[in-house]
Amino acid sequence: MAYRWRKSGLGAVGTKRDMAGFTVIEALVALAVLASTLGAVAQLTAFTHKLGLTLEKRLALEETAKQVLTDFSAHRTLETGVQLRGTKDDQTWRLSTKEYPQPFVDHQARTAWIPEDIVIDVRQSTGEQIRVETVRLVKRPSQ
Image 1 (cartoon, rainbow, N blue to C red):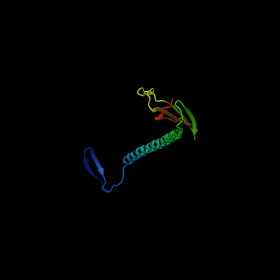
Image 2 (image 1 turned 60 degrees about the vertical axis):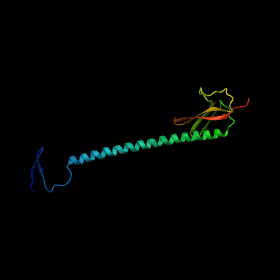
Image 3 (image 1 turned 180 degrees about the vertical axis):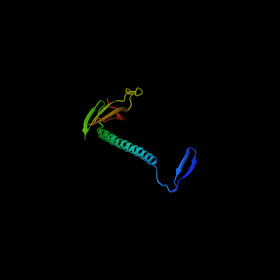
Image 4 (image 1 turned 45 degrees about the horizontal axis):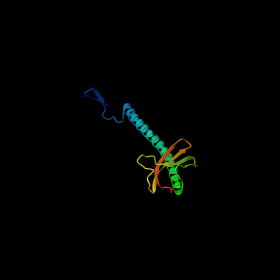
């Protein structure tokens, strides 16, 4: 087998007409690229899994808050200043009502309806928590 020599910009390089395959350097570079790609995919998978768990916990808290608010809406006779507490599954919740605290609301005005601030706090046994604040209109108590 004869080598042919050719001139290149970097010097003389020996080539063999029948040579095929990759050099060790090329194989190592390919392995390095593959390893970095697999590392990025593993990080993305771990992040997606963690995000999924976080969203699952958040949705569970939101469902509890929604259920408490739905149950509370059925009790239309609750007065302003009420605080309720309870548990559901591994979550504890607290609901409180108070006068709507904004300065543009005139609580002395003779209207049939007044705004009421409702705050629902839900906490999971693992420490995650959520606070939902909403407003509802209630009939002014007759005096």
